[in-house]
Length: 600
Image (cartoon, rainbow, N blue to C red; front, side, top):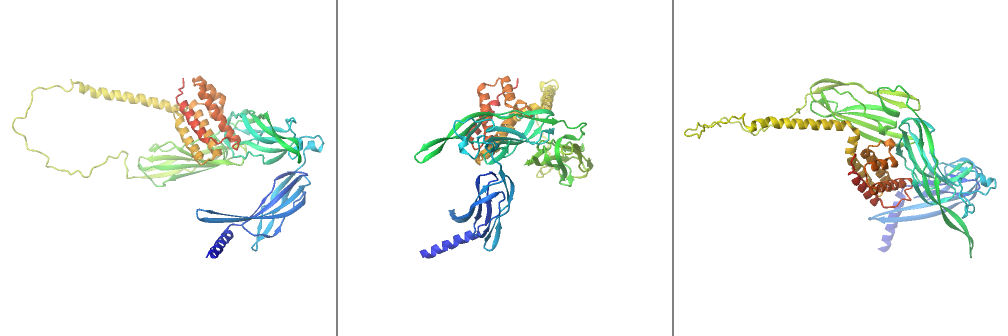
């Protein structure tokens, strides 16, 4: 019986392995330095391979391989068994000639079927110029050149701000990348002063901050890590500057130590303070005259409109959907003005943005939904509207037209003000009683109602109530005209909504999205609460406004520390601490304290 169970188990495992999906992939470096050795590994999963065919790699010399290794793994989770196999073919090469080379696909046979890897490009970089000239400079692949005590020069470690364009139009997307270039390994990285982006709206892009790429700059090779990558939308014309940032960096050098087993290298850490460059960009004003239907859209867009339901009835809600699709500053588009008939009750449009970064800009859709209720039966017209955007690649305005809608409104089942009718009341005409006889208890005393105070009260109270309503209504209109005041009043409500999304990322233990969403919530709250435009929002302006409103120094310090921590987590999420719960509670505490701030 035991033997039968073992055989059955092996058959089940073998069957699961057969059902597993077969894949054939390649693991190879994308950049190597001339003269260095490197390995390309081809991995076959869930299959037994034969007739392996390796491609020829130009510009290299094959030193060894293919070395074949096999592995098997299985697991049993919640009563379900799964297993996988892996075969690796490792080939070692020496890079001989600098250049870019296309490496073809490798092939292998599995059960009579041929599987191929994806082709890839291998770049062989020349050696450092200093090494070629015998100057003994630091090299990323030579630990002997990274000896302890050696001065770290400006060409050995630096941070650079790169822009995709040297000039652009207002609202045109510009990609900004901040990179760390180093010839040393980095054990710790801490920003002490972030670059400022005054005059820009920012759309963050996901990055991988590890030192996993090699780039050649001015004839020298560097390990490179992206610290920040974002899409900038300039909000004003003229020369705008992205200021430099300050950073504390700990690099690793090596000290030669003699032991019983010979000379060995011991890592030694060295802390440095470095400063990035500043970067300027010329922002051109949009051409004049601007069309009347232009409201700030820059990029390339298309427009669609639709009315739902198509059959309209009185006192029943319908929706006009105005959908803009394309790429550019789509998240910042303003709701177009549509001329609805005066016989329609129209509500403020609801905005829904479904856009995300794509390449060097932001792509997606922005939908504006206008809810309206026809009040009368008849035929009506919603005239055609114009949507104008500026195309920076063509340098001109483009106007799109939406269709005109001829609407026929039928009588609906509702009314403007429906009064409920009780059909259970039974009408009777037997409610007249017999005339009462005898003493009726009548009195001769008569008091004039007009002379009483209750008569005049019916005039005084409505007058006072009407005056109070007028005062309140005038105050409400004045507040609604003051957009800064409305933003301030609703700042806390919007902040709680944003914090709710950050809390969801915290529950999912997604620290990257948590810190990005928390930082957006804090910036948005401060802009609304303090009445500072987004283009002018920075720490100096925030501290100045809070000081003018006599906010205590402890609250200001807590806010600045919170902003620094969130920004640092975005630059280097793998170096940030794991106390996201404490960070969230601190953000809530700071917003609660700022809610007590009154504008003087």
